[in-house]
Every structure is written in structure tokens, then in C-alpha cells.
Image (cartoon, rainbow, N blue to C red):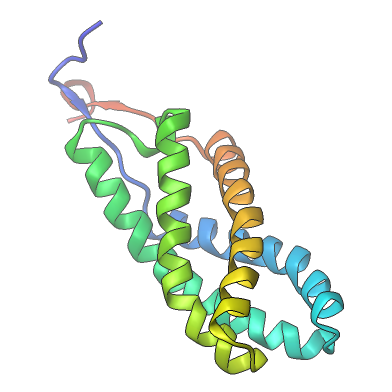
Length: 155
């Protein structure tokens, strides 16, 4: 069925993007900080601060990345909360590649490890986060769906 030209694509508000980003990072930190502290045999506080630095960087990147991805969806006539499974997978992988590029220098400096160890660390974390991103975003879209508006009826 062809979509009527009167349908208007709705984007998430800044407030909604902020709620998504903060809740995404808080839950992720609650999972990863204790595991990272145990793995690197470092105090939870030290890994927690590293996690906060990485989360802060990730939140800023998340806001920009999702805004750009949503703009691409809108230009294609799609509503972000109605992405296909393939679209969600592309979204998650693209975000994680962006995170890896920006995280490696932080891991190297903070943990005092080499590039290869930082890369392996990032691959392990990223592998978890890709799956987490998919399921978190799917759950978020189910809890906070966007609705299409018919611009002729609501104008």
C-alpha cells in the first residue's frame, strides 16, 4: 500500500532524545563498571570514572549520531521508531564503529595499555554493547513510540 502524501514524518524531540541517552548510559554503566573493575583488577571507583568519561563522550556522540540517522530516515520517509530489524542493526553497528574510533585513545591513556590491548578491550565491550543497543532501542521504541500524524487532519 502506498503511503499518502499527507502523512508527515515525526522526529523525536530533544527531551525524548535526552531521556533515551541518559537511560541508555545509566543502565549500561550499571552493568559494565563492576565487570570492568573485576576484569582489570582495579577499584570500582577508578573504572567508574573511566566509565563516566566514556559515557559522557558516548552521550554527546549519541545525540549527534541519532539526530543525523533520524534525518536520513526522515528524508527516506521513515519514522525512526518504525525501523526494520536490518535498519536497527545498521544503526547499532554504525554507532559502535564511531564509538571505537573515539574510545581507543582513552583506553590507552587511562588503563596504560597498548593499542592492541585497547582494541581487544573495545571489541569485547562493543560486542556486548551492539546487542545491548539493539534490545534497548527496541524496548525504548515500544515504551515510547512515535505516531504518524496526518497533516490534513491536524493542520
